[in-house]
Image (tube, rainbow, N blue to C red; front, side, top):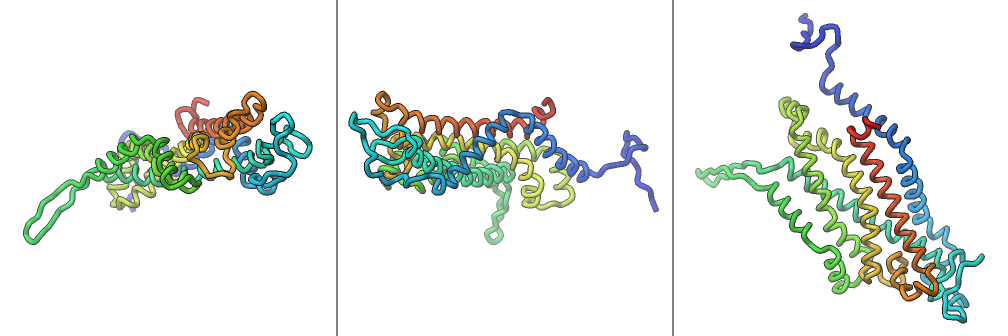
Length: 330
């Protein structure tokens, strides 16, 4: 029986490691290294705690809210001097100009923003990952066209078509597109989510495209091809696991961007139709009260700022933890 021979230049005293064992050890070490970086990050803990609290309050808005956010409470409209009722034991954050409980509307506004942000980002991440990975891996494959005895080898411009379509969508003015569609079809939560997702995936596709091209140039991809791995297996087993953390990071950062974008559209009248609660709509409805009762503007504005800050800090912390260069320095 022949004994294994160490490669040229290797130390015979050291046991040889197979490539898959090394890769498996690296995959085991990466999560522990990332978690060690995250647990030392104050920004991560602040973002994670605040974002979790906002999500839980949005989910349990029907339980936590004391009143229906869309129904005016009798006797709680404008006071004698023309201002909404301020905070009290009955109304923790007061009421709006129509006599609706402001705390209940803030909680349901969080639900509106998160539904749009999570839904749009999930769809955008899925589409962007598929388009970017397919374009990078397919490139311009050569196929043989046969008609009878006539044969010709042509190159299909898969990469060029997908990336040029991505560039075309990147050039669209999303804000104007959403306002125009809302004016034509009527504002709705579903329409808002679809419009944002239909354009938001382009950034993810560009990022995934660049990252997959870098991964495809690595030695372990060449090794997988050498042993006869099929293209679909290489893409799913060897490429996608390396880009999933990147997609998660940018999706987390995208939540903050979409919350801000949804609030802007709602402020301009292209968000959920009244009387649905939305932070942007709440600011638009009470813009004239900025002097007499600034609470009506500061509370939804602070909710937007806190949500955007929390998810931005969480995304930045995840990006630093999953970047080996940054994590190794920390």
